Amino acid sequence: MLIQIGTDQAVHGDEALIRHFEVELATRLSRFSDHITRLEAHFSEETADDGQDRCCVLEARPAGRRTVAVSHHAGSVGEACRGAVHKLESVLESMYGRTDHRKGGDSIRHQDGHAGS
Image (cartoon, rainbow, N blue to C red; front, side, top):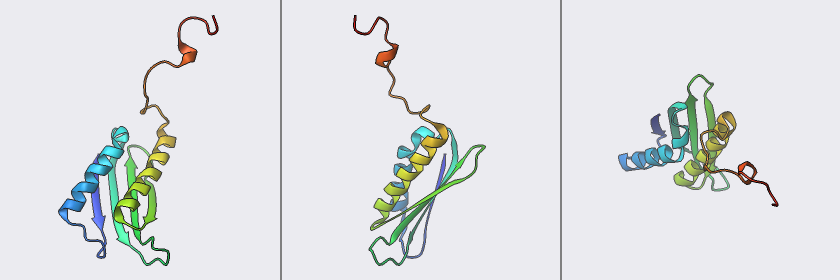
């Protein structure tokens, strides 16, 4: 999964900030890395009366499917990123189901023997 990060003029995207978010995005979305060919993140600052002026837009490009885009507004770039990742995880979960995210183990319904014996 290729990750590209961009910022507008109001958000100073130095190398350390970009590396931090590359690692965070790669880690949080790792279970979908086989499905996503490219992930683009864009951070911006918008004028907002409620203090939620930082925005993160994530665009995921799943192989063989349409581009998925989500956004989240928050008071900081980090909060905006976490909110957008949470939304993207929800969308990708609904697209791919839970087939790629199992805890393993049998449920009580699939154990050998009889219940209540």
